[in-house]
Image (tube, rainbow, N blue to C red; front, top):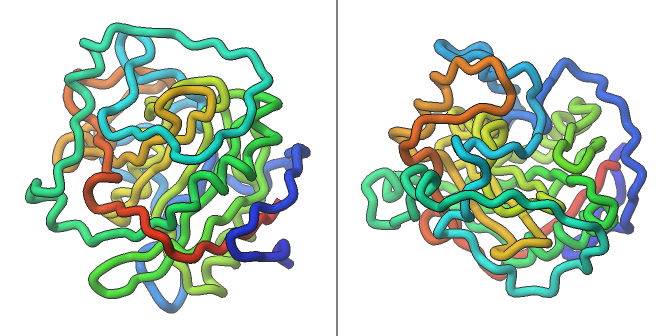
Length: 292
């Protein structure tokens, strides 16, 4: 049923993303399953949480959550140490003053008490360049690509073992997953945990939009260590690894009652980089599975 799997080799590019959604999910990626070696369980949608109201449109549409437009990349974002795909599409980027964003983003600090309580996640170093290679066809067509970062509970740490590319359809600023039941079946059969998610901004910078923040709140509420990777091949830095601040950002997003998909949030630290903290890139094997 699943596409051919392979280790550390990018799948053949497929630019045809014409799948129609067959699920009731309205956001671009599924919510993570709690750590379990038996079966995956779909966590509650944020709309079922007290104090949360689902946006009208719940996809990865990258309108910044900054009150005055796009903010700068967080301190923890990094330039990718690998060649990035050649960019052949025109870019359109809105700039904004750094003052509005500086109060919203805080750099990760491994000495923080909250960070020390998180279990370490080992992320294969080749995951990011491999994902950019997989997304290259879509990137050249100014389309987003999304994926899931699955792995195992190793007791004192988590290890990302699999990059899963689900069936999906996308535009320049949206990416919606199709046939979620295939993802659930895959994770159950492999006894895998959803540790994070990854997606591209083909022509935009590296940041978490307001919709991204709401999407990630579902992941992080179920698994505090959950992280989000944003790849921006046409921008510098080219990638960032983020999580919501907790306490602070997670509660702010879960309690947000905004009806619009794109909306500002309070000028407080909402999210932080975590590649200097509990997420550590290592030279370990990676399995790539493309379900498209």
